[in-house]
Length: 143
Image (cartoon, rainbow, N blue to C red; front, side):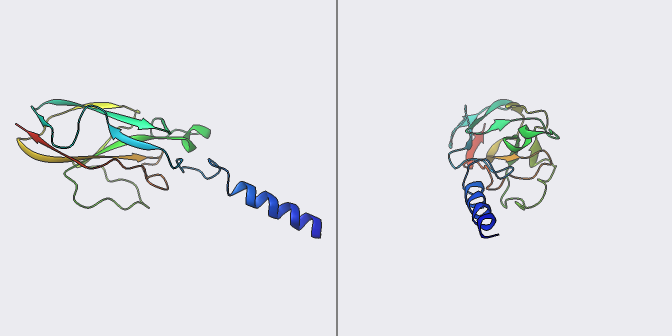
């Protein structure tokens, strides 16, 4: 029994320290970001926004199998002042755009003025990963 306990202890230590063991947990170096926009940019509407991801994958919403633990899909937060609950599905409204098919770009039409944009990656059920993959919030001006 003592040997079994020792083997179990070693297995548990190993399992809980190997990256990728926990479902939906991106590695520390993973990030989402905007490829073609930066904070302070001035754009004309409509404009294209391109999403980047590093260290994790993109897969459509509803994906099954192992890929769902190693990837997610983009959500674009527009003019959001309070982040959604990280333990619940990301809302689906005009301020929380879902890219369910795994899209990595969009053409946006926004009214003139200042706007904020931020990316949040969601899992197969539109819930943020743990820890969440969130881009920096950028401000743009539509002229």
